[in-house]
Length: 187
Length: 331
Image (cartoon, rainbow over all chains, first blue to last red; front, side, top):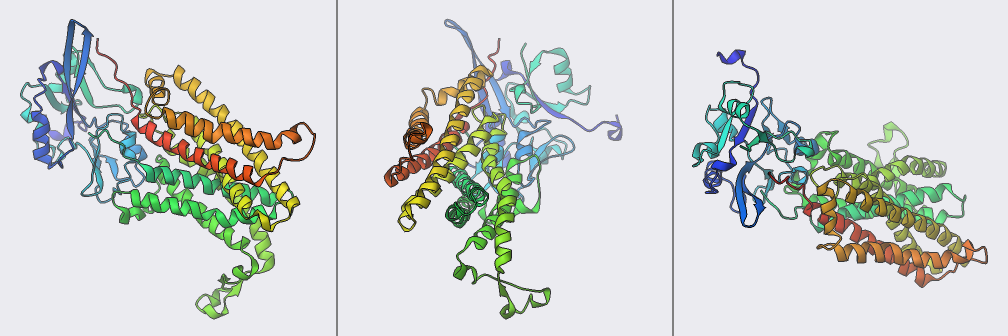
């Protein structure tokens, strides 16, 4: 399909917790790719315990910024430094950020961190520099178990669209009204 | 991903001092209108004190930024969905009005040092600038008090809206935080005025002092009662709200902020000063005599209110940041 006929992309993550082995390669890949300062991470792996002893299990849930459709961080930013690009990426204009950290209070996912050295807040960008060059985010490319899937939800032929058509999925904290763009497959 | 306290004591001090200034201005404005000349000294004292706490707080706030030198970026835009953006403009407007209000309440000799050009043509000729005209000053007091009063209330409310407007922090996310902070702002402003008036009281005659104290103590007692009747529904609503909201109450009901909340906010900040003020007002309530006047009690009760107001900001800023939405356990 020619690019001009396609609607604006809606970039999403589809995670398969059952494929995640908590190896944290995605965290390393992100740190290397984006030069994330020591002590901070743009992505992480949640641990979801379920069951009652002795029948217990842990699911690993890879996570990063949810690039919400209604981002609470963008809403509260007093200088307009956090903005939402046309394709839904929630990005930060580092020249306008004054480091007030109000966005960090507003984020239901604690996805943001304060970079003490530069004095601004930072977070996952869905590897916007790679995306604009036609490459998937670094964490997706490196994922060992194939738990992280990334793609355009507005394209019915994309891997993420097909996964979401076949499986039941949930989002985290939908009650925050932020409209997160990371889906977790439950079965 | 970071799970630490991003906002610390500097933000606590900022919210606290902004509240005191708002309260000082509001009570000074009220004193300007109520009782004719009876509360003149209170109106003046309030006006002279009002701009300073908030200016100290704003300095703290700028210092707390990641890039303090770029604070001016706040004033290149108005982000109407951001309480902090609206607040920045509101607080700036308030400080300007409070400073102008201070000038018109300065004692005559000091006021004469402030000079303004009488005509546009004098704008560059500093020597021809005139001291403020007496009629203008008297009118200015009334107008600035009237214009500044709602803005002062807005500042007091803003300190709570800043926290309350965030769905991600269940401990904050109720409109009652804004109301509570507003009433606490007014109460701490009144207490600050009461404290200063009591400390310099020996230069005024006892009769005037009694009138002043009657006004301040009654207003403060009413505000404390209003605060108590906001904290009660705060607990009721939060505990009957979502799981996250109910769980966030644990922070003050057997968590790290239990002692500062029940000891600092409830006992020191509300119940103890209310008891003292009730004792002072008791003869009036029974219509059996005059206000029980004691300089020491005034100083103690206002200090208690001021300490309690600080604890209120402290507990809310810290506990709110520690509160979090809770995950739905996967089946």
